Length: 422
Image (cartoon, rainbow, N blue to C red; front, side):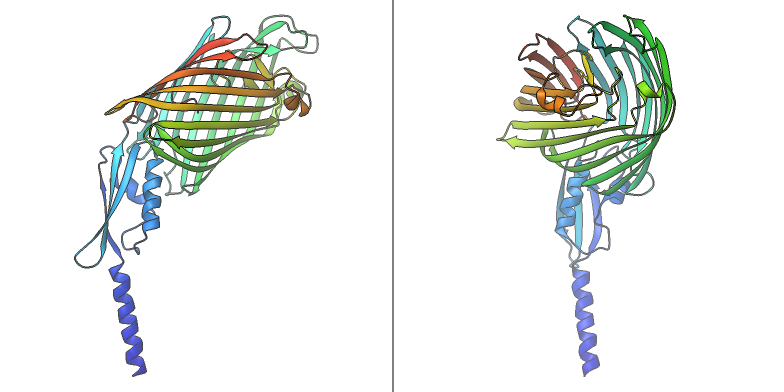
């Protein structure tokens, strides 16, 4: 009798488990992205026990993909008591041209054009390159496959040859410009612990050369200098962002770092043994059409007394309206805050207006962290802009911002770009 009772309990347990089993997963709406790629990324698998929380997690994971504009899910009970899950995908067009243009107080223009495919081979691999002009010509090539090996592991390779006119800032406030030539090859490994936590670790081999273009240098700075450097580079990202077309909500933290392993050349001026930067981003939906966006950027590097400090004050990087590389430092605190409002939306097209405040402060090379508080190198700008958005193309936001300084500085300029500023 006891054995019969145990057998009956096991039979009922098997039946109950079977009744809660996912026997079919369907992907609808995808055209270019492979169905098998979605199934490989999904937490819910065919044969697993139904779990609505995991279904919601899959839906959110899909929304984070460059090839996906929106994703939804539906759970259907089948006649045999099992379940079918249907994920409906709205795809982005993922072959994206890019353009960044900025103007400084001297009316000099710098620009960068690029083409990237964010859904290469239908597996959300990234491949592409750029050409940039900042007095001299620069170019680079990239390939990243974050989920190439497994759902969690991937690799990436990039090569960049950046040749720029780089101003340096001396105590005598004289104008000095160098020709900066950097050639760098980098290999990275990606690991996605879950859709909130992502890690990158890589090796960067670079050659950097500086050659004086114009200006008078003090005796302790040579007219030509260079360094060969091998560095460990990486990134840690915590992402709790939810995207719904042009609207963003949630929190994200991105930490980038670089440690120099070996270097040879003008080490005293160019070594930068450690460089670290963390972006804290917070987004909030306000009403039906509003979006409040914020970014706090903290940066710190080896604090050498050198005019070639790694963190630049620049239109495209941190403060809209300030100009092209107008100051440098070995530490910085930058806060960007803006309100975006969608005032027109029809079908695939939307327009936003935005008002922003950008503020930042820098630590002088060889200085103290108190420089950040004293604000001798502080900048405060405010302004407004427009966004022209194609809702079916990944990151297809053409932006125009005009920034005006508040305070002693009389700078103002216009900044163009592809993609939101942050």
